[in-house]
Image 1: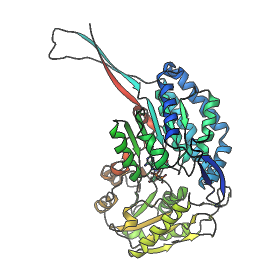
Image 2: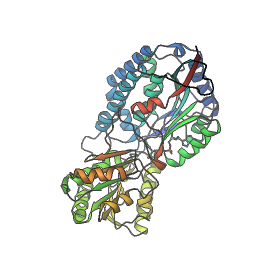
Image 3: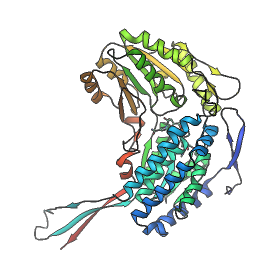
Image 4: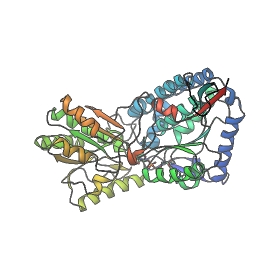
Length: 471
Ligand code: NAD
Protein backbone atom coordinates (compact mmCIF):
# COMPACT_ATOMS: atom_id res chain seq x y z
CA UNK A 1 0.00 0.00 0.00
CA UNK A 2 1.47 3.44 -0.87
CA UNK A 3 2.20 6.01 1.83
CA UNK A 4 -0.24 8.92 2.20
CA UNK A 5 2.53 11.25 1.06
CA UNK A 6 3.36 9.05 -1.94
CA UNK A 7 6.98 9.01 -0.77
CA UNK A 8 9.18 5.97 -1.29
CA UNK A 9 12.48 4.61 0.00
CA UNK A 10 15.14 3.01 -2.18
CA UNK A 11 16.17 -0.48 -1.11
CA UNK A 12 19.87 -0.93 -1.87
CA UNK A 13 21.80 -4.14 -2.51
CA UNK A 14 24.91 -3.56 -0.37
CA UNK A 15 27.03 -5.93 -2.49
CA UNK A 16 26.52 -3.95 -5.70
CA UNK A 17 25.20 -0.57 -4.49
CA UNK A 18 22.36 -1.02 -7.02
CA UNK A 19 18.75 -0.13 -6.18
CA UNK A 20 16.84 -3.38 -5.64
CA UNK A 21 13.46 -1.71 -5.52
CA UNK A 22 11.33 0.95 -3.88
CA UNK A 23 9.02 0.66 -0.88
CA UNK A 24 6.44 3.03 0.54
CA UNK A 25 7.90 5.39 3.13
CA UNK A 26 5.34 5.75 5.91
CA UNK A 27 4.84 8.96 7.86
CA UNK A 28 2.75 9.99 10.85
CA UNK A 29 -0.65 9.62 9.15
CA UNK A 30 0.19 6.11 7.92
CA UNK A 31 1.38 5.23 11.41
CA UNK A 32 -1.89 6.49 12.87
CA UNK A 33 -3.85 4.30 10.45
CA UNK A 34 -1.80 1.22 11.29
CA UNK A 35 -2.07 1.77 15.05
CA UNK A 36 -5.84 2.30 14.84
CA UNK A 37 -6.19 -0.91 12.81
CA UNK A 38 -4.23 -2.80 15.47
CA UNK A 39 -6.28 -1.16 18.22
CA UNK A 40 -9.58 -2.17 16.57
CA UNK A 41 -8.33 -5.71 16.05
CA UNK A 42 -7.35 -5.94 19.72
CA UNK A 43 -10.55 -4.42 21.12
CA UNK A 44 -13.23 -5.65 18.75
CA UNK A 45 -12.13 -8.11 16.11
CA UNK A 46 -12.28 -11.92 16.14
CA UNK A 47 -8.77 -11.85 17.65
CA UNK A 48 -10.16 -10.34 20.85
CA UNK A 49 -12.14 -13.50 21.64
CA UNK A 50 -10.02 -16.07 19.85
CA UNK A 51 -9.20 -19.08 22.01
CA UNK A 52 -5.54 -19.77 22.89
CA UNK A 53 -5.51 -23.04 20.92
CA UNK A 54 -6.52 -21.12 17.80
CA UNK A 55 -3.70 -18.58 18.29
CA UNK A 56 -1.33 -21.50 18.70
CA UNK A 57 -2.62 -23.09 15.50
CA UNK A 58 -2.13 -19.86 13.53
CA UNK A 59 1.44 -19.44 14.81
CA UNK A 60 2.26 -23.04 13.92
CA UNK A 61 0.78 -22.50 10.45
CA UNK A 62 2.91 -19.39 10.05
CA UNK A 63 6.01 -21.37 11.10
CA UNK A 64 5.22 -23.96 8.42
CA UNK A 65 4.80 -21.23 5.79
CA UNK A 66 8.08 -19.53 6.74
CA UNK A 67 9.79 -22.92 6.57
CA UNK A 68 8.24 -23.69 3.19
CA UNK A 69 9.49 -20.33 1.88
CA UNK A 70 12.89 -20.54 3.60
CA UNK A 71 15.01 -20.41 0.46
CA UNK A 72 13.20 -17.41 -1.05
CA UNK A 73 13.31 -15.55 2.28
CA UNK A 74 17.02 -16.34 2.68
CA UNK A 75 17.84 -15.12 -0.82
CA UNK A 76 15.94 -11.87 -0.35
CA UNK A 77 17.60 -11.38 3.06
CA UNK A 78 20.96 -11.88 1.41
CA UNK A 79 20.28 -9.36 -1.38
CA UNK A 80 18.87 -6.78 1.03
CA UNK A 81 21.28 -7.15 3.96
CA UNK A 82 24.46 -8.55 2.38
CA UNK A 83 24.70 -11.69 4.51
CA UNK A 84 25.27 -15.09 2.90
CA UNK A 85 22.27 -17.13 1.83
CA UNK A 86 23.66 -20.08 3.79
CA UNK A 87 23.80 -18.08 7.04
CA UNK A 88 20.39 -16.53 6.38
CA UNK A 89 18.91 -19.98 5.92
CA UNK A 90 20.75 -21.75 8.76
CA UNK A 91 20.46 -18.96 11.30
CA UNK A 92 17.96 -16.22 10.47
CA UNK A 93 15.20 -18.31 8.95
CA UNK A 94 15.76 -21.50 10.98
CA UNK A 95 15.73 -19.64 14.29
CA UNK A 96 12.67 -17.66 13.18
CA UNK A 97 10.81 -20.91 12.48
CA UNK A 98 11.87 -22.39 15.84
CA UNK A 99 10.87 -19.22 17.65
CA UNK A 100 7.40 -19.25 16.08
CA UNK A 101 6.94 -22.89 17.14
CA UNK A 102 8.33 -22.34 20.63
CA UNK A 103 6.12 -19.30 21.26
CA UNK A 104 3.08 -21.03 19.71
CA UNK A 105 3.35 -23.51 22.58
CA UNK A 106 3.10 -20.76 25.19
CA UNK A 107 -0.25 -19.54 23.81
CA UNK A 108 -1.99 -22.46 25.55
CA UNK A 109 0.09 -22.30 28.73
CA UNK A 110 -0.61 -18.80 30.02
CA UNK A 111 -1.54 -19.17 33.66
CA UNK A 112 -2.14 -17.13 36.79
CA UNK A 113 -2.12 -18.34 40.39
CA UNK A 114 -4.55 -18.81 43.24
CA UNK A 115 -3.37 -17.14 46.41
CA UNK A 116 -4.15 -17.61 50.12
CA UNK A 117 -4.56 -14.09 51.53
CA UNK A 118 -4.97 -12.73 55.09
CA UNK A 119 -6.10 -9.08 54.57
CA UNK A 120 -5.12 -7.93 58.06
CA UNK A 121 -7.65 -5.08 58.26
CA UNK A 122 -10.67 -7.32 57.42
CA UNK A 123 -10.23 -10.35 59.71
CA UNK A 124 -13.93 -11.23 59.58
CA UNK A 125 -13.99 -11.63 55.78
CA UNK A 126 -13.04 -14.51 53.51
CA UNK A 127 -11.81 -14.23 49.94
CA UNK A 128 -11.19 -16.21 46.82
CA UNK A 129 -8.17 -14.58 45.19
CA UNK A 130 -6.34 -15.27 42.00
CA UNK A 131 -4.22 -13.61 39.33
CA UNK A 132 -4.98 -13.49 35.63
CA UNK A 133 -2.41 -12.85 32.92
CA UNK A 134 -3.86 -10.66 30.16
CA UNK A 135 -2.43 -9.49 26.86
CA UNK A 136 -0.85 -6.05 27.28
CA UNK A 137 -2.61 -4.72 24.15
CA UNK A 138 -1.27 -3.08 21.01
CA UNK A 139 2.47 -3.56 20.54
CA UNK A 140 4.81 -1.38 18.49
CA UNK A 141 7.74 -3.53 17.37
CA UNK A 142 10.69 -1.56 15.99
CA UNK A 143 13.74 -3.52 14.88
CA UNK A 144 17.27 -3.22 13.46
CA UNK A 145 18.71 -4.37 10.13
CA UNK A 146 21.25 -6.99 11.16
CA UNK A 147 18.84 -9.97 11.39
CA UNK A 148 15.77 -8.41 9.77
CA UNK A 149 13.28 -11.29 9.64
CA UNK A 150 14.57 -12.94 12.79
CA UNK A 151 14.30 -9.81 14.94
CA UNK A 152 10.78 -9.20 13.63
CA UNK A 153 9.78 -12.73 14.63
CA UNK A 154 11.40 -12.38 18.07
CA UNK A 155 8.84 -9.62 18.70
CA UNK A 156 5.83 -10.95 16.79
CA UNK A 157 5.82 -14.53 18.06
CA UNK A 158 5.55 -13.87 21.82
CA UNK A 159 3.25 -10.88 21.26
CA UNK A 160 0.82 -12.96 19.20
CA UNK A 161 1.08 -15.94 21.57
CA UNK A 162 0.07 -13.58 24.39
CA UNK A 163 -2.91 -12.29 22.39
CA UNK A 164 -1.56 -8.84 21.50
CA UNK A 165 -1.87 -7.12 18.16
CA UNK A 166 1.20 -5.58 16.54
CA UNK A 167 2.44 -2.73 14.38
CA UNK A 168 5.85 -3.82 13.09
CA UNK A 169 8.40 -1.38 11.71
CA UNK A 170 11.42 -3.08 10.14
CA UNK A 171 14.62 -1.11 9.62
CA UNK A 172 14.45 1.16 6.57
CA UNK A 173 17.65 -0.45 5.20
CA UNK A 174 16.16 -3.98 5.16
CA UNK A 175 12.37 -3.99 4.82
CA UNK A 176 11.87 -6.78 2.28
CA UNK A 177 11.58 -9.97 4.34
CA UNK A 178 9.21 -8.27 6.80
CA UNK A 179 6.93 -7.47 3.85
CA UNK A 180 7.17 -11.08 2.66
CA UNK A 181 6.36 -12.20 6.22
CA UNK A 182 3.26 -9.99 6.07
CA UNK A 183 2.02 -11.96 3.07
CA UNK A 184 2.62 -15.23 4.91
CA UNK A 185 0.78 -13.89 7.98
CA UNK A 186 -2.25 -13.16 5.78
CA UNK A 187 -1.96 -16.59 4.14
CA UNK A 188 -1.81 -18.28 7.56
CA UNK A 189 -5.21 -16.74 8.31
CA UNK A 190 -4.50 -14.17 11.03
CA UNK A 191 -7.49 -11.79 11.13
CA UNK A 192 -7.04 -8.37 9.47
CA UNK A 193 -5.43 -5.75 11.70
CA UNK A 194 -3.68 -8.24 14.01
CA UNK A 195 -0.30 -7.59 12.37
CA UNK A 196 0.36 -4.33 10.52
CA UNK A 197 3.69 -3.70 8.83
CA UNK A 198 4.89 -0.22 8.01
CA UNK A 199 8.20 0.80 6.49
CA UNK A 200 9.84 4.12 7.10
CA UNK A 201 12.82 5.77 8.70
CA UNK A 202 13.32 6.44 12.39
CA UNK A 203 12.33 10.09 12.75
CA UNK A 204 9.30 10.15 10.42
CA UNK A 205 7.87 6.66 11.07
CA UNK A 206 9.48 5.09 14.17
CA UNK A 207 9.16 8.17 16.38
CA UNK A 208 5.40 8.78 15.83
CA UNK A 209 4.79 5.05 16.26
CA UNK A 210 6.45 4.69 19.66
CA UNK A 211 4.88 7.95 20.89
CA UNK A 212 1.37 7.04 19.72
CA UNK A 213 -1.08 7.16 22.65
CA UNK A 214 -2.93 4.03 21.51
CA UNK A 215 0.22 1.88 21.79
CA UNK A 216 0.38 -0.17 25.01
CA UNK A 217 3.88 -1.59 24.65
CA UNK A 218 7.00 -0.85 22.63
CA UNK A 219 9.41 -3.67 21.90
CA UNK A 220 12.61 -2.31 20.40
CA UNK A 221 15.83 -3.77 19.05
CA UNK A 222 18.47 -1.30 17.98
CA UNK A 223 21.13 1.07 19.22
CA UNK A 224 21.44 2.28 22.79
CA UNK A 225 21.18 5.87 21.57
CA UNK A 226 17.79 5.34 19.91
CA UNK A 227 16.70 3.01 22.73
CA UNK A 228 17.01 5.89 25.19
CA UNK A 229 14.85 8.13 22.97
CA UNK A 230 12.25 5.38 22.74
CA UNK A 231 12.27 4.75 26.48
CA UNK A 232 11.67 8.46 27.13
CA UNK A 233 8.83 8.64 24.59
CA UNK A 234 7.24 5.50 26.07
CA UNK A 235 7.39 6.74 29.65
CA UNK A 236 5.53 9.88 28.58
CA UNK A 237 2.44 7.70 27.92
CA UNK A 238 3.36 5.03 30.54
CA UNK A 239 3.69 2.64 27.62
CA UNK A 240 5.47 -0.55 28.68
CA UNK A 241 8.77 -1.11 26.92
CA UNK A 242 11.47 -3.68 26.27
CA UNK A 243 14.80 -2.51 24.87
CA UNK A 244 17.34 -4.84 23.24
CA UNK A 245 20.34 -2.61 22.63
CA UNK A 246 24.00 -2.54 21.73
CA UNK A 247 26.95 -4.41 23.14
CA UNK A 248 30.72 -4.64 23.38
CA UNK A 249 31.02 -8.24 24.43
CA UNK A 250 34.29 -9.65 25.79
CA UNK A 251 35.87 -12.94 24.72
CA UNK A 252 38.03 -14.13 27.62
CA UNK A 253 40.67 -16.76 26.87
CA UNK A 254 42.29 -18.51 29.86
CA UNK A 255 45.74 -19.98 29.42
CA UNK A 256 44.73 -23.60 30.00
CA UNK A 257 42.85 -23.95 26.72
CA UNK A 258 43.97 -24.98 23.25
CA UNK A 259 45.09 -21.75 21.50
CA UNK A 260 43.94 -22.83 18.04
CA UNK A 261 40.43 -23.66 19.32
CA UNK A 262 40.25 -20.37 21.22
CA UNK A 263 41.43 -18.41 18.16
CA UNK A 264 38.88 -20.08 15.88
CA UNK A 265 36.17 -19.33 18.45
CA UNK A 266 37.29 -15.71 18.83
CA UNK A 267 37.32 -15.20 15.05
CA UNK A 268 33.83 -16.64 14.77
CA UNK A 269 32.66 -14.48 17.69
CA UNK A 270 33.63 -11.23 15.93
CA UNK A 271 33.41 -12.00 12.20
CA UNK A 272 30.06 -13.85 12.13
CA UNK A 273 27.52 -11.71 10.24
CA UNK A 274 30.43 -9.35 9.43
CA UNK A 275 30.58 -8.20 13.03
CA UNK A 276 27.07 -6.75 12.77
CA UNK A 277 25.86 -8.69 15.79
CA UNK A 278 24.73 -7.03 19.00
CA UNK A 279 26.58 -9.67 21.05
CA UNK A 280 29.63 -9.87 18.74
CA UNK A 281 32.79 -10.72 20.65
CA UNK A 282 34.46 -7.43 19.81
CA UNK A 283 36.96 -7.34 22.71
CA UNK A 284 39.42 -10.23 22.97
CA UNK A 285 41.28 -10.73 26.26
CA UNK A 286 43.96 -13.44 26.26
CA UNK A 287 46.02 -14.49 29.28
CA UNK A 288 49.57 -13.19 28.76
CA UNK A 289 51.51 -16.32 27.92
CA UNK A 290 49.12 -17.25 25.07
CA UNK A 291 48.41 -13.74 23.75
CA UNK A 292 50.81 -13.65 20.78
CA UNK A 293 49.86 -17.11 19.58
CA UNK A 294 46.08 -16.57 19.77
CA UNK A 295 46.23 -13.12 18.15
CA UNK A 296 48.44 -14.46 15.33
CA UNK A 297 45.93 -17.25 14.70
CA UNK A 298 42.95 -14.87 14.69
CA UNK A 299 44.80 -12.53 12.31
CA UNK A 300 45.61 -15.46 10.03
CA UNK A 301 41.93 -16.48 9.93
CA UNK A 302 40.90 -12.86 9.27
CA UNK A 303 43.38 -12.24 6.47
CA UNK A 304 42.45 -15.44 4.65
CA UNK A 305 38.69 -14.88 4.74
CA UNK A 306 37.30 -14.56 1.17
CA UNK A 307 35.01 -11.55 0.85
CA UNK A 308 32.13 -11.64 -1.61
CA UNK A 309 28.41 -11.19 -2.10
CA UNK A 310 25.92 -13.31 -0.20
CA UNK A 311 24.96 -15.51 -3.14
CA UNK A 312 28.62 -16.55 -3.64
CA UNK A 313 29.08 -19.84 -1.77
CA UNK A 314 32.85 -19.30 -1.54
CA UNK A 315 32.52 -16.00 0.31
CA UNK A 316 32.99 -16.12 4.07
CA UNK A 317 32.15 -12.49 4.64
CA UNK A 318 29.88 -10.16 2.73
CA UNK A 319 29.41 -6.40 2.57
CA UNK A 320 28.21 -4.30 5.49
CA UNK A 321 24.59 -3.24 5.26
CA UNK A 322 25.01 0.32 3.97
CA UNK A 323 27.48 2.98 2.89
CA UNK A 324 26.82 4.75 6.20
CA UNK A 325 27.76 1.62 8.17
CA UNK A 326 30.88 1.02 6.07
CA UNK A 327 32.02 4.60 6.63
CA UNK A 328 31.25 4.40 10.34
CA UNK A 329 33.36 1.24 10.73
CA UNK A 330 36.28 2.64 8.68
CA UNK A 331 36.11 5.82 10.74
CA UNK A 332 36.42 3.80 13.95
CA UNK A 333 39.49 2.02 12.58
CA UNK A 334 41.04 5.43 11.88
CA UNK A 335 40.17 6.60 15.40
CA UNK A 336 41.90 3.48 16.74
CA UNK A 337 45.04 4.24 14.71
CA UNK A 338 45.02 7.88 15.80
CA UNK A 339 44.74 6.86 19.46
CA UNK A 340 47.75 4.52 19.08
CA UNK A 341 46.36 1.10 18.17
CA UNK A 342 48.34 -1.24 15.91
CA UNK A 343 46.51 -2.72 12.93
CA UNK A 344 47.64 -6.36 12.84
CA UNK A 345 45.52 -7.19 9.82
CA UNK A 346 42.81 -5.47 7.76
CA UNK A 347 42.22 -1.83 8.52
CA UNK A 348 40.50 -0.56 5.37
CA UNK A 349 37.64 -0.79 2.95
CA UNK A 350 37.84 -3.76 0.55
CA UNK A 351 36.81 -3.76 -3.14
CA UNK A 352 35.76 -0.65 -5.11
CA UNK A 353 32.11 -1.58 -5.36
CA UNK A 354 29.93 -2.73 -2.48
CA UNK A 355 30.21 -1.88 1.20
CA UNK A 356 33.01 -4.29 2.12
CA UNK A 357 35.40 -3.78 5.04
CA UNK A 358 38.43 -6.00 5.66
CA UNK A 359 38.26 -8.15 8.80
CA UNK A 360 40.43 -6.15 11.17
CA UNK A 361 42.43 -6.94 14.32
CA UNK A 362 43.79 -4.14 16.53
CA UNK A 363 46.38 -4.56 19.30
CA UNK A 364 48.19 -2.07 21.58
CA UNK A 365 44.81 -0.93 22.79
CA UNK A 366 43.75 0.10 26.29
CA UNK A 367 40.53 0.62 28.24
CA UNK A 368 40.46 4.36 27.52
CA UNK A 369 40.37 4.05 23.73
CA UNK A 370 37.12 4.62 21.86
CA UNK A 371 37.59 1.40 19.84
CA UNK A 372 37.53 -0.51 23.16
CA UNK A 373 34.66 1.42 24.74
CA UNK A 374 32.23 2.06 21.87
CA UNK A 375 30.20 -0.34 19.75
CA UNK A 376 31.66 -0.41 16.22
CA UNK A 377 29.18 -2.96 14.81
CA UNK A 378 31.52 -4.25 12.12
CA UNK A 379 34.36 -6.76 11.65
CA UNK A 380 36.79 -5.05 14.02
CA UNK A 381 38.38 -6.83 16.98
CA UNK A 382 40.49 -5.28 19.73
CA UNK A 383 42.88 -7.66 21.53
CA UNK A 384 44.51 -7.17 24.94
CA UNK A 385 46.69 -9.40 27.14
CA UNK A 386 45.80 -9.80 30.83
CA UNK A 387 47.47 -11.22 33.94
CA UNK A 388 44.81 -12.76 36.16
CA UNK A 389 41.08 -13.38 36.52
CA UNK A 390 40.40 -10.35 38.73
CA UNK A 391 42.02 -8.07 36.17
CA UNK A 392 40.15 -9.56 33.21
CA UNK A 393 36.81 -9.48 35.06
CA UNK A 394 37.34 -5.79 35.80
CA UNK A 395 38.26 -5.02 32.20
CA UNK A 396 35.45 -7.16 30.79
CA UNK A 397 32.98 -5.10 32.84
CA UNK A 398 34.62 -1.78 32.08
CA UNK A 399 32.29 -0.52 29.34
CA UNK A 400 28.76 0.80 29.65
CA UNK A 401 27.35 -2.35 28.00
CA UNK A 402 26.50 -5.82 29.31
CA UNK A 403 24.97 -8.01 26.62
CA UNK A 404 27.14 -11.12 26.31
CA UNK A 405 30.54 -12.59 27.18
CA UNK A 406 32.38 -15.80 26.41
CA UNK A 407 34.95 -17.64 28.49
CA UNK A 408 37.32 -20.11 26.84
CA UNK A 409 38.73 -22.59 29.34
CA UNK A 410 38.46 -26.17 30.55
CA UNK A 411 39.23 -25.25 34.14
CA UNK A 412 35.77 -25.60 35.68
CA UNK A 413 36.66 -23.99 38.94
CA UNK A 414 38.05 -20.87 37.27
CA UNK A 415 35.09 -20.71 34.86
CA UNK A 416 32.58 -20.95 37.70
CA UNK A 417 34.41 -18.29 39.67
CA UNK A 418 34.37 -15.97 36.65
CA UNK A 419 30.72 -16.37 35.55
CA UNK A 420 29.16 -14.50 38.52
CA UNK A 421 31.66 -11.66 38.14
CA UNK A 422 30.67 -10.90 34.53
CA UNK A 423 27.94 -8.28 34.14
CA UNK A 424 26.20 -9.61 31.04
CA UNK A 425 22.82 -11.05 30.09
CA UNK A 426 24.40 -14.17 28.59
CA UNK A 427 27.69 -15.92 29.35
CA UNK A 428 28.91 -18.59 26.93
CA UNK A 429 31.60 -21.10 27.85
CA UNK A 430 33.71 -22.49 24.99
CA UNK A 431 31.23 -21.06 22.47
CA UNK A 432 29.87 -17.63 21.56
CA UNK A 433 26.60 -16.16 20.18
CA UNK A 434 24.66 -19.39 20.78
CA UNK A 435 20.93 -18.67 20.96
CA UNK A 436 17.81 -20.72 21.44
CA UNK A 437 14.15 -19.71 21.63
CA UNK A 438 13.99 -21.24 25.13
CA UNK A 439 16.84 -19.11 26.53
CA UNK A 440 16.08 -15.49 27.48
CA UNK A 441 18.27 -13.01 25.64
CA UNK A 442 18.94 -9.43 26.66
CA UNK A 443 21.26 -7.02 28.33
CA UNK A 444 22.50 -5.73 31.66
CA UNK A 445 23.18 -2.01 31.98
CA UNK A 446 23.12 0.01 28.71
CA UNK A 447 22.55 -3.13 26.65
CA UNK A 448 18.88 -2.96 27.44
CA UNK A 449 15.86 -3.53 29.64
CA UNK A 450 13.90 -6.79 29.55
CA UNK A 451 14.42 -9.97 27.58
CA UNK A 452 13.58 -11.42 24.17
CA UNK A 453 13.05 -15.19 23.87
CA UNK A 454 12.18 -17.69 26.57
CA UNK A 455 9.18 -17.41 28.85
CA UNK A 456 10.60 -14.04 29.92
CA UNK A 457 9.64 -12.65 26.49
CA UNK A 458 6.08 -13.96 26.75
CA UNK A 459 5.74 -12.42 30.24
CA UNK A 460 6.71 -9.03 28.87
CA UNK A 461 3.61 -9.02 26.64
CA UNK A 462 1.27 -9.82 29.57
CA UNK A 463 -0.20 -7.73 32.37
CA UNK A 464 -1.08 -9.26 35.74
CA UNK A 465 -4.56 -8.65 37.10
CA UNK A 466 -5.25 -9.48 40.76
CA UNK A 467 -8.82 -10.58 41.58
CA UNK A 468 -10.27 -10.46 45.13
CA UNK A 469 -13.71 -12.00 45.55
CA UNK A 470 -15.36 -11.77 48.96
CA UNK A 471 -17.21 -15.00 49.70
P1 NAD B 1 19.05 2.03 15.20
O1 NAD B 1 18.83 2.25 16.65
O2 NAD B 1 19.62 3.14 14.41
O3 NAD B 1 17.67 1.64 14.48
C1 NAD B 1 16.89 0.58 14.93
C2 NAD B 1 15.45 0.83 14.53
O4 NAD B 1 14.98 2.00 15.20
C3 NAD B 1 15.23 1.08 13.04
O5 NAD B 1 14.03 0.46 12.65
C4 NAD B 1 15.13 2.60 12.96
O6 NAD B 1 14.38 3.06 11.87
C5 NAD B 1 14.39 2.90 14.26
N1 NAD B 1 14.56 4.27 14.76
C6 NAD B 1 15.60 5.11 14.57
N2 NAD B 1 15.37 6.29 15.20
C7 NAD B 1 14.17 6.18 15.81
C8 NAD B 1 13.39 7.03 16.63
N3 NAD B 1 13.81 8.25 16.97
N4 NAD B 1 12.22 6.57 17.11
C9 NAD B 1 11.79 5.33 16.81
N5 NAD B 1 12.47 4.48 16.02
C10 NAD B 1 13.65 4.89 15.54
O7 NAD B 1 19.94 0.72 15.12
P2 NAD B 1 20.52 0.02 13.83
O8 NAD B 1 21.67 0.79 13.35
O9 NAD B 1 19.39 -0.30 12.90
O10 NAD B 1 20.99 -1.39 14.45
C11 NAD B 1 22.20 -1.58 15.06
C12 NAD B 1 22.03 -1.57 16.57
O11 NAD B 1 21.09 -2.56 16.98
C13 NAD B 1 23.33 -1.94 17.26
O12 NAD B 1 23.54 -1.06 18.34
C14 NAD B 1 23.06 -3.35 17.76
O13 NAD B 1 23.85 -3.73 18.86
C15 NAD B 1 21.62 -3.29 18.08
N6 NAD B 1 21.03 -4.65 18.14
C16 NAD B 1 20.70 -5.17 19.36
C17 NAD B 1 20.20 -6.46 19.46
C18 NAD B 1 19.83 -7.07 20.79
O14 NAD B 1 19.08 -8.04 20.81
N7 NAD B 1 20.31 -6.55 21.91
C19 NAD B 1 20.02 -7.22 18.30
C20 NAD B 1 20.36 -6.65 17.08
C21 NAD B 1 20.86 -5.36 17.01
